Image: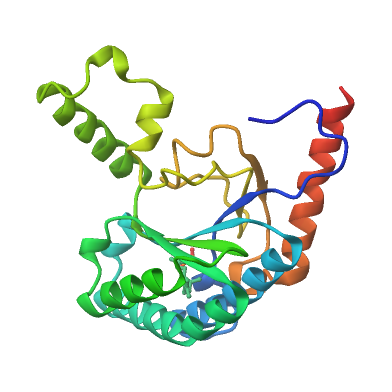
Length: 240
Ligand code: FPP
């Protein structure tokens, strides 16, 4: 929740990003969509560096939604191998950058190789403290909420909890983001004004910034600008 007492401009503790527009970026250049995703992976690298530099504690990226499975098989495969390469190359960097990796979503739907890679890097980076990179993969906000409700219902039926025990905190503890503070800032690129089933519970109080640029054009400077805009909004809030 925002605080009315903040005097200094605060850095958002948690930034969540809907990385949109890779396909249109490629189309504008007469390139295959995969080139847009490749360039988008470069933006991921830059934005991560920028977040570390600014002291952002959590960065959550919507890398693959549960709806993305309905894309052509060739594009899904290309996205998965891009992700594999990114993880493979990033594994060492995460050590150097002291970044912890987490993944949320229906990970059992991912290819075995990708899942194993994620598990290995998660275990290896579990003690890192500079920043947590949360990759939302095969992720859907509604699915996450349904799964939390199911887990509470199972416990209630088993007599482990009663209905009156269920409050916001207990509910949040059954989400995959349990233990992660809610995003302070949600950024979406490519000008679309939609949430697209991303972190539905968690963004209740987030500031939302929509950027017109396509994701592959969103780089370090754009992240700094988004943080400044967040700080301007907070300063106004503090002055009230
Ligand atoms: C949206 O663009 C982007 C995605 C569906 C996937 C995001 C993936 C990356 C940025 C690259 C790899 C990710 C990592 C973490 C290395 P779109 O295809 O929906 O674009 P469009 O709306 O213009 O078609």
